[in-house]
Length: 194
Image 1 (cartoon, rainbow, N blue to C red):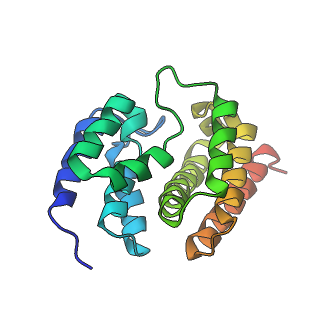
Image 2: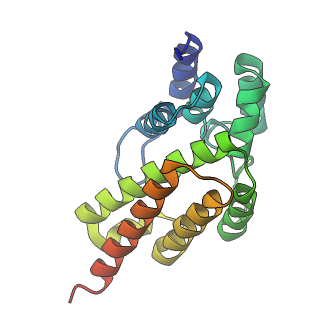
């Protein structure tokens, strides 16, 4: 299954949205994250629409909300827009309260379709792996980057992994669950170095 030149347009769109963004606290260009998520999706059988949605999965949240979603719908079609809408937990700025927003998103993931779960699991897997690496470099300081701090962030990753796993049998579930366990282990070791 070959992708068409639509993905070139999608890379340009992602660059437009994320050109000035960096990963939380690291200074790494944010576009590397969306590229990694799209690569994971592609490596796990995602079709072109799903690959594009993975590449643009943060565009609505980091762009102009619903206006960006409508641009995506116009440029890439309704299916891509619907996948991105399902992967987005905030459409307005300022974002709604963190815990409430995350709980709603977790609930939605329990019954999300295959392609949405594929994108979200790839996103969370890349985020968790990046956080594990950052823990090794920064120690407990890493948790200051996250709204949920240590406890909330660990809760969220465990809960979202469990919600994605409901009614979905896919190799990424095992990868995500293992990464979440490793993050918990690394965090526990830092909190109690004895």
